[in-house]
Length: 372
View 1 (tube, rainbow, N blue to C red):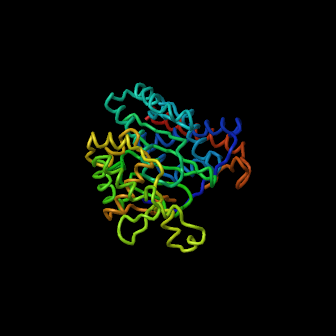
View 2 (tube, rainbow, N blue to C red; view 1 turned 90 degrees about the vertical axis):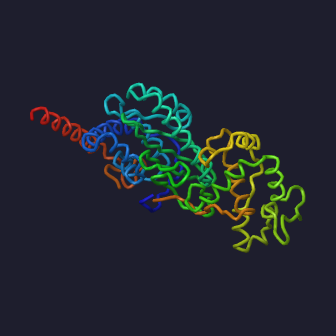
View 3 (cartoon, rainbow, N blue to C red; view 1 turned 135 degrees about the vertical axis):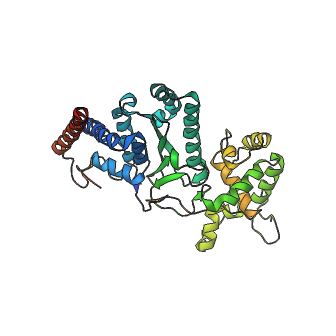
């Protein structure tokens, strides 16, 4: 992630007004005509994967500069405004139920863009694994509810997905770009937008490399033995039990009293070393049977989720001395106003005039090319 800074995305309810969405679609269409004419389809994909550019696009379209709707509404507008046969770019997925249609959307887009069956399978895998990574490997307290995939006629892609934390009423947005992903399980993001938190388990960090290797070794271990060690580490039914002389169990950290919690170190331990109450041992049995070669293969196993990832990470650190990263990986402006009147109400007339100017400029440029 090259660009750094912080953008907060508070959860906002309600819907964008029809008059604004209509203008947003028209302006988005005009903007992408210019971008694709100037930078090509892959250039457009690269821009969408840039968190700061996407944030600026939301501002240019007169939507909120920092709300959760920045992601969901703008992606929805782009899905309506960008026709795959016209632009050479298709948009799959969306918010809530629409996110569950991503794979079928990929089939439709692939057919329109004449992508091979092999390429469509690659796109479906990228969609699934990017969602799995942000849901299970980056444990920041945000549950994914939005997943959009932008696909070019050359098979390049960008993923923009968002999670919410209802307790603190904030959202977090994750950006991916196919050409920048070297490994799905190690620092694959173009950027993550949101507020900064303490004690975020980040298994995608380079600092977690040893922990990932050890987690795979543990996943290849007989699950019954692993379950025994896990219960022993967690204290089982005996709160006073020690896994080694003088060492506290993780179960005790869960029971830190308010008085004990006044120690900063104890509070940190209580938060970080909190064992998941439920681990999917069936998924670990499947992992044992399949013997994954690497962490990505382990993640791809059905049923491997946040609890399983966290459990193996804690065992890796506390027994084998391979700690994961607990550093939050989050990283990281008005043309026509904003929906909520910030910094000022939407200037409808100027927005319409700008749309017309952009559209006419593209038409004139194409006409000159034909004459030449």
